[in-house]
Each structure stands twice: as C-alpha cells, then as structure tokens.
Amino acid sequence: MNPALRILAAGPGATVQDAGRPGFSRWGVTGCGAMDPVALRIANRALGGGEDAAAIEIPLGGLEVTAESEALDVAVVGGDFDVRLDGRRLPGAVALRLAPGARLAIRAGASGAFAYLAVAGTLDVPAVLGSRATHTRSHLGGLDGRMLRAGDHLAVSRRREVVAVPAAIEAAALAGESGPVRVVLGPQADHFEAEEIAAFLSRDWRLSPRSDRMAYTLDGPPLVLARGHDIVSDAVTHGAIQVPGSGSPFVLMADRQPTGGYPKIATVIGADLGRMAQIRPGEPVRFAAVPLEAAVAARRLREERLAAPVRLVPLVRSDFTTADLLGLDLVSGVVDARTGQGR
Amino acid sequence: MVPLRFLDSGEAMLVVEFGATIDAALNERVLALDAAMTRAAIPGVIETTPTFRSLAIHYEPLIVDRKRLVARILDLEAEAETMVRSARSWVFPCCYEPPHGEDLAEVAARLALTPERLVLLHTERALRVHMYGFSPGFAYLGGLTEDLAASRRAHPRPPHPADAVMIAGGMSAIAPLPMPTGWWVIGRTPERVFAPRRDPAFLVAVGDEIRFEAIDAATFTELSRRAAAGEPVARVGTRR
Image (tube, rainbow over all chains, first blue to last red; front, side):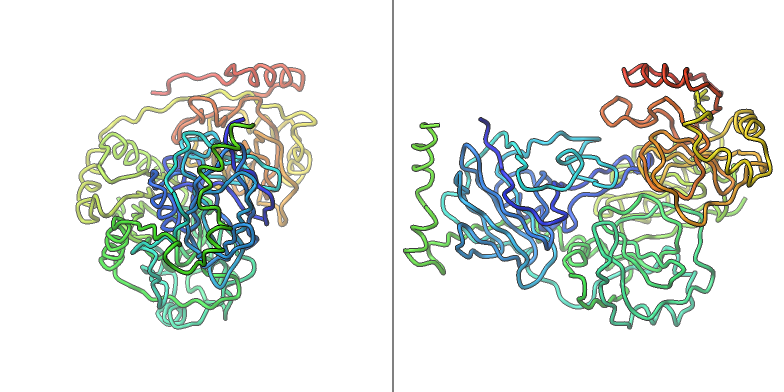
C-alpha cells in the first residue's frame, strides 16, 4: 500500500488547499487557495518543499490524522492551534515524523482561525485547471471537490524524510503583526461620503458568525451608501470590501466569486490577508487606510521575511522532558523501518 | 470617447474602467484591450478579467510597478482600436421542451408571450458572451431583444439543471453548474460548456457569439449522450 494520510476525525470545512487557481477568472473560476497564504508557505518551507504545494487547511473545527503504511514527515503552521501527538502537547508551529498509527490532533487553540498541515511529499489529489485547491461551491479540486471527512485517505507520493526529531518551527514571517488591518481605499470609495469612509476606518467592527472562506462579514452600525448599492458587476479580488444595500460590509476572502455587483469601499492589502483570515468570528477588527506605495512596501517586507531561513529547533533541547521524548518516539525511523518490513 | 479610469483594488489589481453601463460598444473596447494585453504578455501580469465595462488586471507589483503598467496599457489601448479581434460564432442546440424548459411557461406568461413566441425570439438573434462570472462557465449573453427582458425572480428558485439556458434582467445566460438562481430556466443545452478535464475546459471565449437552435427532447437525449462521450455538439464558424 502506498503511504497516505488517513483522516481520523475532521470538523467542518477542512480542505486541501494550495496557492490557488489563477488564470481562469475570465471563465468565472474562483482563485480559492489558502486563506492564510503565509502560513501555508512557511509550513511547506519547513519541510524543504515547494512553498505553494498543496496542504490541508484546518479551520476551527480541527482535524485528527495518522500516517498509513509508512511514516510521514509533516509540519503544522497557522494560528495558535492546540497540537497534540498521541495526547502530548506540542508547539503550535511544529514539524514532526508521524508514525503509522500515531494520532496527530490539531484543534482550535488560544487564537487564530486556520492552521495548515503540510506533508514532506506530494498530496496525491489531481490538479484541476492547474491547482489542487478545493473550491467546494463548484466541486473543483482537492479530494472530489469536497471537505475532508473521517475515513478519507490522501495518498502521498514522492515522500521525503526531513524531520529527524520533532522541532519547533521558527520563521521571521511568523512574527505577528499587530494593529489595524491595512487597506487601500477603493476601487469605489467615491460611492461613499467622506464621513462614511471616516466611520468605516474609525469603527470597531466585529467579525460576524456568518463568515466563511467566501466572505468575512463585519457586524457594526451599517454604512450609508451615497450613490446606491448596485454597480454593474465587475471583477473583484481577494481582500476587496463590498458594501451591499444592508450597509454591513463584507471582506471577500479566498473563495470569493470572481465578479461582484456591490461598491467596494476599500481593499485589504496583500500583506495583511493572512492576518485578516486568522480573525475569529466574534473578535474585533479595525481598519487603517494606507497609500498604495505603503501596500507595495509591506508586500516587499513580507517577501523578505519569507525569504529568511525557516529554522527547525529540535524539541530535545527545549521544553520536553526525557519521558516526553521517549513518548514522542524519537527513534521512530528505526522502529518504522522494522515494523514496515513486516507489512 | 470617455477617457479610461484606472481604479486600484489593493496593490495587486488594477481596474481599467471604460464606463459604468452594460453597452456593446464599451464591451467591445474591453475585449480589444484584453486581446492586446494577452498578446503583449507583460511580465508581472498574472491574468486579466474582462467584464461588461472594465478590464481587471491582476499583477505582481514587485515585478511590474503601477506607473509602468498604466503606461503600457495606454499604449496598448491606442493600438487596440485598430486591431481586428478574432471571435467565433457558435450554434448551440437548446431544448426548450419539458422537462428541460422548467420555467418557460411561467416566464412567458409574465412577458405576455406564448411559449412558442418566446422560443422564436430567443433563437432568432445571435447573442454575445459579454463576460463570465458568478460560477465557473457561467456566461452572460447580451444582445437579447427587449421583448424578453424579464425581471429577476424576487426569491431564488431551487438549483437549476446543468447547462441551463436562462433569461433575466434583459440578458440570457448559460449556466453549467447547478446552483440556486434568480434567473428563469427556459431550456437546456446538451453541450458541455465547461468540462474541467477536457482541453479546452471552456468552449466559448468572451466576445464569441452564440445563436440557439431549438431541438426536441428526443434530439436532446441523443446529443446529450454524444456530448457525454466527448463529441462536440455545438457548431462553430468564423464571424470575421
């Protein structure tokens, strides 16, 4: 049997995602891809793979997996999730060798809305229109175009061995930014009076429970549209903030439709899309307008941070006792080789 | 001619706006610039999205900066006016009979037309793909006679069948993927407008023309079988 990840339990919304499906928006195809692209890239980098490779995106409902047939080296990066291997608590950003039968549980932790489980190898789901990203609404990509569920097998090809011992992942790009989410005003800021734009930027919004991969709805006093709430549909991008007739803005996220017919007051800058995605329903959010040049500078800084080395710091020397380490099965490579032959 | 507007949606999408309305002449300018942008293959431009009245340019600002991009677009727009854009003209079989034209009788009654008259009006003109949007392969078709300008439903109907042919808001549409919709389903084409594993996955380009040809339910069944086996059942010619 080929090596595979087996899903033991999955909350709603866990999907296979990669860097997305660009190039087909002219045919009505959604870009989709990881909600937090930076976390996906670091998880893949930690395992030495192509940074846009497909991984499993885990929302607040969590995920439990094991390896089948052979041990798999995996990395978890994202929000501050509760990560446990056979019940033992690990750091939220961690790389480890997952032995067959071992249970890796990733659940919502202190903060953050998405974590990524990357594999050293290729998640063997077919590329559709050039991408493995799942778009559940149009049943494209991933595993049969749907959310993952208990019992699913995800075959892994071109398996690599890169994590000798469990290790915390340290990366410059993981350093959390704080402060308001930065936006560039427009493209339809002229549909709003100056005081409405000021209100949008000064208000403490709260992320609505009606938020998903398609859009994050903002709860708060409604905005007033000076020039009506319908425009002739045009293209939209990840991060565009539309204001419909209700006056409750919503931020278009990874699974947005490629076109939309509401005025867009502002657009979240590329460097802050991951941070926006990690906000949980019920949490507050504020926006700050920046000039286009600042958005480009922030994008450049993000790329510089991502280019810095991703360090794997073995947990041997840090916060784990000898008993824990034995429990973590640091010699699993040897053990696996032996038990693997018996299969 | 109205001057172009350049609108930023963040630092990675630039919208070139030709106007604010649905208008065949505006759409023609959008498509001409789109074709010119495709030919120019500017490094850093990831993709372009043509819509009724604007062309969105998705770009990587760390490769091509906005100022340079705008300069190139202005050059290309000037050239594009003189270019002949290639477009195809399709004949799409469409079955308006039961069980396929699910909402035909209802929307015909709203338009004070007989179902037969509605079918005649829908098949007599070539329609043009103004843009795709909403879902993969959902094609907005312009050029419909005003006699078929039914307003949208007040509430969405249950999911339409695959490859539904619909009308609403003065337009027609082909919708490959079943979804709840506010449009009226008047027929269904046996052609697969979108097949993710076929090359090409999408048959009809933005700017192409489509004329519908009425077929009976038995022909629909036969053509549908052939389409499922990978045979094209829509016909194509060159418009210009």
